[in-house]
Length: 213
Image (cartoon, rainbow, N blue to C red; front, side, top):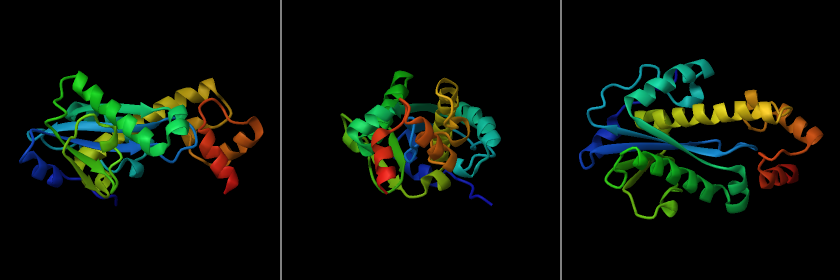
């Protein structure tokens, strides 16, 4: 059974901050489409997390679709995106930072005091800090998307939003199977690239690396 996230690590951060903002990225390893970063702001009185919230990678599409609205009601969320062109031009690490900053700017625009919050970021590398104009207290935690409910929720809303974008793009640029592979390098997707060539949404630098390896 997939692990159930908790608010244990958020509790420690709430001792010094009124809000905890869980953050995580989705789409880092895709060959097409944006990289997206979700941010979910929670106060100490947020209550219990949605019952079926888990690491989004372990949830079925139907469960993700039904749980994401509950996450949005539970906290205040935003998703930032960096395009495939930005990934090609700036590199994935910088693009992740741009997407993360855009998510935080969106939270600020709807009233979240981002600078006074504590950020809980999934992973062991802080790709967010270089993109910020002012430092924000950030805690890194490996497997936070599995163990920390704020980060699980952030990843879920980001994945659902990015998946919806890729499904929509599949109707504009048909033939690559994005409605099912969401831009990742499935065998059918690779075969379509070989037959049709890359689209305007493909990460050209990544395709060169894939061919070379």
